[in-house]
Image 1 (cartoon, rainbow, N blue to C red):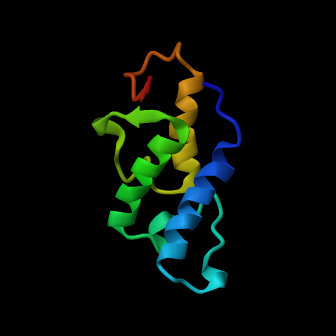
Image 2 (image 1 turned 60 degrees about the horizontal axis):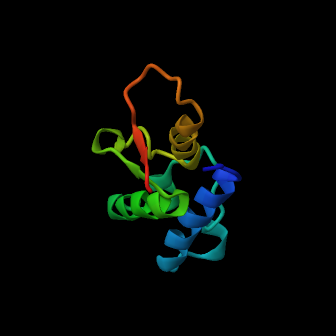
Length: 99
């Protein structure tokens, strides 16, 4: 699987969730390092985002990485996804690719 445009794709998913909240247009812009909770997502929205990211990138996160640290902002999610590009890593596998 080739991962391209990771940050724009995650940003699009976040914006989809924000639009559902009927926020004013000026609140719909989010930068990669902006905390998702501060942008207007609830903890329930972040759980929804986990599923959206898994579907978008055709992967499944192991439960031990679904944490506030990994889903704090768009950049932290992108960093987690980019782990797929480093299979030689000696750390515990944190992402499984879906068949």
